[in-house]
Image 1 (cartoon, one colour):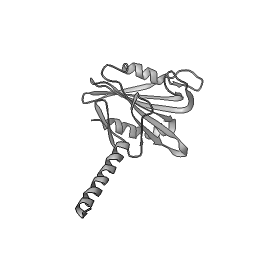
Image 2 (cartoon, rainbow, N blue to C red):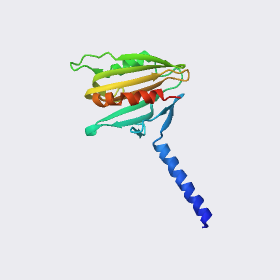
Image 3 (cartoon, rainbow, N blue to C red):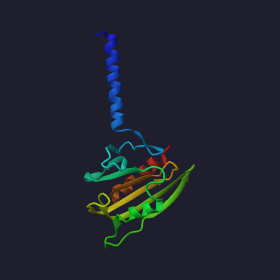
Image 4 (cartoon, rainbow, N blue to C red):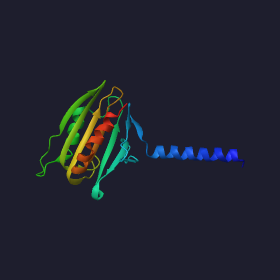
Amino acid sequence: MTMKKLFFFLLTLTACSFLRAESIAPTQFNVGAFSFTRPDTWNWEAPTSPMRKAQLTILGKNGATALVTFFYFGPGQGGTVQANVDRWAAQFTAIDGTPIKATTTTQKIKTTTITFVSARGTFANGMPGGPTQACTDYALRGAILESPQGDVYVKMTGPEDLVKQSTAAFGQMIFSFR
């Protein structure tokens, strides 16, 4: 192999490894009509359900983890904003087992309306319709980005302290959309 061919072989091999790393842990990724920038300290994960379009984990102290999931179902699919807020809130109960009420705020960025959702309490962790595990002192921070091409639903759940610590980065990620 000539030196020139060896150089191009090594260059191609290096480029392929960078592309492979990017496909495994992209810094930017698309969900529906939106492109997001992943916070540097959050880990890219393969989605654990076909309903999930992207999935991130946040590592905290003492092995604590929070999960950030992205859902997109297409135009006119996935339910209304309020139905999703209600579904997310229904996954939480107060210490005495009574339902909680999620808090919401809405912001408009250019032509995109974003509804932020917050809840805390005991979280019924699991797939809809399946078995759940009660996780005490958990919290949720969610965002629903409305789009004529289909809404995007982003949900961060985990131990309350870790979710609180990650809320600023979550907001930056949501506002990074293009």
